Length: 134
Image 1 (cartoon, helix red, strand yellow):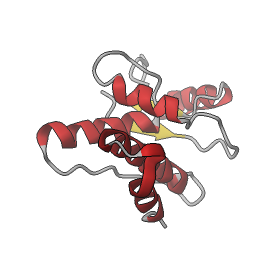
Image 2 (image 1 turned 180 degrees about the horizontal axis):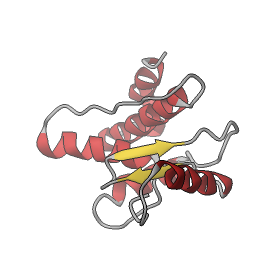
Image 3 (image 1 turned 30 degrees about the horizontal axis):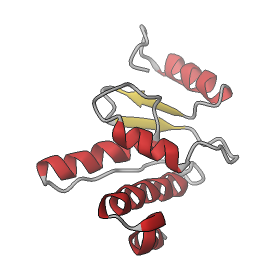
Image 4 (image 1 turned 45 degrees about the vertical axis):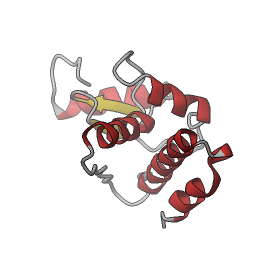
């Protein structure tokens, strides 16, 4: 969306529709701090541990496709670097995928925190974070 020449509602909706049709449900707005997610209403195999690690390790070194893991990585790195609390706001209508995106953020944070602490397979920390989401 950042590369659009005409930024207006019809063009934004058309771009999101085209990206959704090709399986790209995430789109960045601005400098990676806002992510638009369009619910595909089906499971996509885009949430594996290798992709989590790729987003965590790529911080500031290469441009990756927009993804909820990118937002989570930005927040986690800012927390670690600046020591200031971070917030991720998820907004949308009923059925838009807010809960699923939140679960994926918790999975990402648990995986990264556990890998840094040396716990195997996410361990207890992962279960605590995942179970904290309603």
